[in-house]
Picture (cartoon, rainbow, N blue to C red):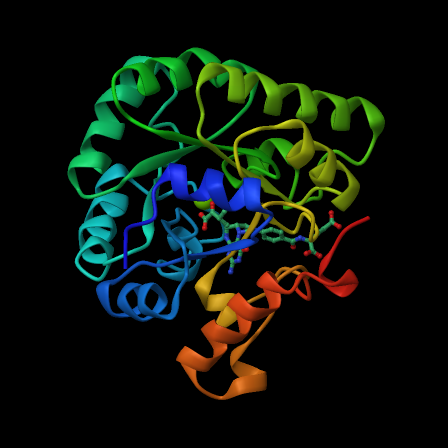
Length: 264
Ligand SMILES: Nc1nc(=O)c2c([nH]1)NC[C@@H]1CN(c3ccc(C(=O)N[C@@H](CCC(=O)O)C(=O)O)cc3)CN21
Ligand SMILES: CC(C)C(=O)C(=O)O
Ligand SMILES: [Mg+2]
């Protein structure tokens, strides 16, 4: 089976084929997700919460992400591997280049950064130097203390317009992928249709080009609160590989996310 690249995801978008992504943090889960057909694996800074037990993602370091990227890389045959850049590791474009290099050399195919207009120069610098970028808009968890909680973003028309403008600018700056998190479904649909690059949603409705979830939510072992938009697929299947196949099938058929997992 040939490897998934940004070109494959672009082709999926053009063909209207919905693709799936999951977070992964180790070789065993990565190998199971990869072999069941998950297209994109993300070494997410959500590890700060689901692996390390913090209340947010801010304590995660570049070395944490690099270690788990090396682990996940060894489990992959087919999936595209994205590594999250942690809080404050890309505050300047110089820091971004140094730290993104560490993550690419750990085995990532692409790095993901949270932010809009302020990131444009960094996105073009990374891309020009050979580091593919996935941007992340909407509820960007590294800004949870600015937002005052993990809250849906883009609810009023000014903020919705700003997010749409940022999405277009990010594409123009050279980003090859965009994650939109916790935004109203109609806004996510508008963004996905306005951009050429694939848009992956989480808590953003069914009309994005792909879907991503945190693996611990899919397998029903997240502690504390579980985001309303996520779905426990282990509950209905009872076996991990079957749960992953159910997630892939429901995304492909447009069943997930349904209205109970969507903000309007
Ligand atoms: N287990 C887990 N799943 C995730 O999806 C996830 C993490 N951890 N950690 C990093 C970020 C944080 N995320 C979160 C966390 C909480 C909500 C949440 O509670 N959202 C409310 C919406 C509140 C509103 O209506 O404004 C919800 O009801 O889902 C959303 C995203 C997404 N990411
Ligand atoms: C939820 C996804 C998009 C993420 O950024 C993470 O897992 O850190
Ligand atoms: Mg993240």
